[in-house]
Image (tube, rainbow, N blue to C red):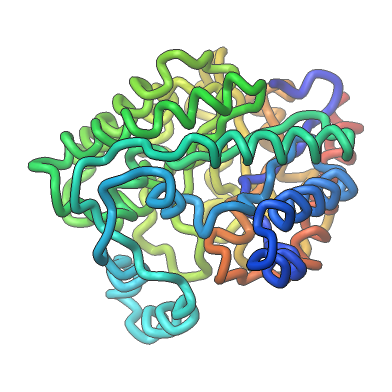
Amino acid sequence: MRSIERLLTTHTGSLPRPPEFGDAAVADYDRALCGAVGTVVRLQADAGIDLVSDGEMSKPSYATYVTERTSGFGGEGFKMGTSLSDAIDFPDWGRALVTAMGTVPATQACIGEVTRTDIESVHRDIANLKSAADAAGAVGTFLTAASPGVLTQFLENQYYPSHEAYLEALAEAMRPEYLAIHEAGITLQLDCPDLTATGRHVEFAHTDLGAWKRIMGSHIEALNAATADIPPEAMRLHLCWGNYEGPHNHDVPLRDIIEIAFTARPSLISFEAANPRHEHEWRVFEEVKVPDDKVLVPGVIDSTTNYVEHPELVAQRLVRFAKLVGREKVIGGTDCGFATFASFVPVFPTVVYAKLKSLAQGAELASRELW
């Protein structure tokens, strides 16, 4: 999908759960889930967002949900927030982050063979999104799914003999989910912070850049194998440096990884471009040519603060990219999700939709200039 007549808009996937979802979920989960998806899709459409998602209503987080749909996981893995490189540099901030994330459940570990055990949950998510999108008159839809690489970082390997063997098993287990989303006519978004954040400055923080690029390449190879039966134009890939408000002083520069990221099969590449650590990186595309089959989805809305970006600022950000790579190869997006973990929502729900509305308004302003 490209911006042919105007700049299209989307976001990264997760959205705050409606209050009534939590109240009703215990009594009738399936009905409450369907209602929650209907609510968040309508709110996206009302804000002016073109390409909408289910808000990840059925997932406790964008990665750990996989333990509910596959076998091989249990026990306890690493503790989130404690191994970030910037938390080591700034221990007072690191302690505050761990306290703030205290409600986030501990991750499980891989303790046995990973196999797909539940495909029905994916079909339920598909049905809920399609019904809600039809009712809201959405332009297009997408569903998120964890990449094999990011799962190696969230779900510690305590079973397989090597990182590569674990990665291969995860790719095979995720393949049916990827295919189900595509075959339903919904764009598949693959969440890949392992290519930028959780890999580079957590698990592989002490490797040099060359070694890191080889690891990154192996993750992309696994991703490409798992999606081999899906056309590139039916997929989008999300790069993320960690969706938290913090120093981010160890983030790998976009310039160092973007050309490798382009070797991934998905056509749409979503990445952070609004927060203070990465906004300057639009200039990367003064030097780096975007392949003909790729479309950029730069984040022009920060997903970690309660500032509502002015539409004129959003327009400025979008026009920068459009003038460098071509207006048809730009879709306005957000830096990351607004509810990466269901229990930890740093941006207030009402502010989230104000930010999405500003995204749509900014895209309209930019479209007037570009068209």
